[in-house]
Image (tube, rainbow, N blue to C red; front, side, top):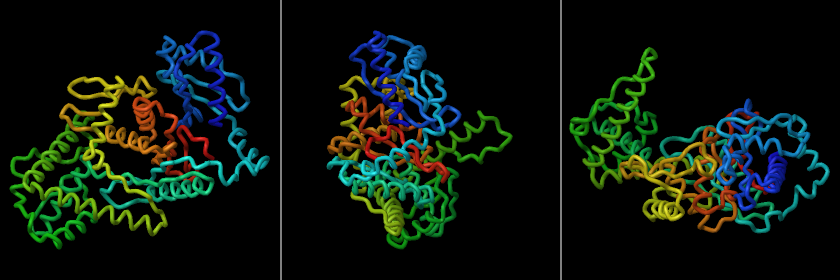
Length: 426
């Protein structure tokens, strides 16, 4: 169905060029994605938004022209225009099973042992944060990613299976502080765990293992750790207003940030020792879980290595050279809205610290610079909204957004997988 819609939109593109509505040199970036909300249809495209500037049209006006010039197709039952210019397609029930008929009519074409012809595919899946144990959602992603890799390899692709380790940024700091407070507790001190820290039993186990290894080497008085820190307020109540809940949340985050900085200062080089111990303990657990599930990876890629190697700075410099970034309110922004995203995104905060998005931008650039032909990411369905910004970043950096594909793993077994920009590899 997705390929059918892409072909129809490609024909529509040619029709609009012939009519002089869009210029012949307009970028032909035809992307069709499954919708997250089925009330918005089965598939959607942002084609009008990506072509609006080149056509000199408002996105919704251009969307209407695209719909008006769309060839008729019995698989489409309804077409809507939504939001700033998205075009939503509702498909007939019969079209869902068209691929089954194709398989039955030409089985050989669907079982070719070498359709890949050696194409290099980087398949990233699971990539669970090393801040806690794995859960069943990670298991679904692991099973799907592993099976997909096996199928691709069996049909002639060179598959590189990769796990991205989120071992940098604030979540790694929160893990370090959570384990350190439990370490103080294991050393006999009475402590209060911040509500925004990680409270699980695995944190206690990690802290006790740390104490067994280093004894009291990093012991500090709990009162010294907490002295002068902003308060950690009580959790909000249901009766609180939305504004009050947001204020309480902000104060909790302020407390946790101050605690991280205090522990970092008190421990100095020991802070990295505690953090690495915690991260390594969680990654050992993750590796053991995946191995017991018979899921293997060719590479475990560290987010921290992006910063240490200068890959993040390299990506930011390249975006600046290409004219896709700007400064606002002291922060560095990527103009993703010009490339199909709903709004622009922050890369470097006003405090000089890069965002998680900046690291993801650098990581996907790194993938392409390793000369992979196709990038496939397997994500949880809750990351659906993240696709457009990553795709926009890849387009801004390399002009190769068509190389990037995402498989979304849903929590419902009735709808386990949805593809965004599915590659023609099946």
